[in-house]
View (cartoon, rainbow, N blue to C red):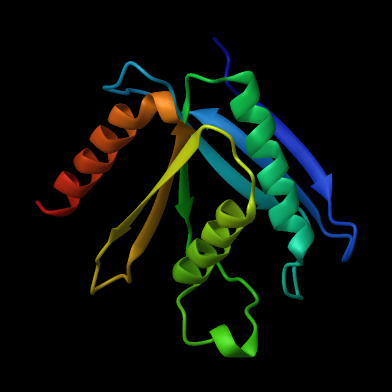
Length: 155
């Protein structure tokens, strides 16, 4: 099955263009497809992201999970530059994205969907933040993936 999808959107507040991309990981050891999501900004972003970005991401994840009930979404918060408010300047870019993503998920009304956050401690490069999202029926697989990620981290 082809799980690849692109969701282009332009924020209504700032007019910034994005594409949210869903693509399947290769070489998986799980019986459930694991789908990576990537947010690509198509404009030169010189201002803070507005709430419209989170609303669009939220809506596209809901849409995707309604189409594909048997997948787990993997979201890695990258360390690319991001404009942060003054009160969040002390946070790493990854941690800031992680907080925004968690807030989006908490305020959303996802039915029968769970999210598992994984924080990999890395004193040299900075912590890494990963989120796994899937329908509640995939709880055991989500836990196994989280355990496997943590095992890799502890080597």
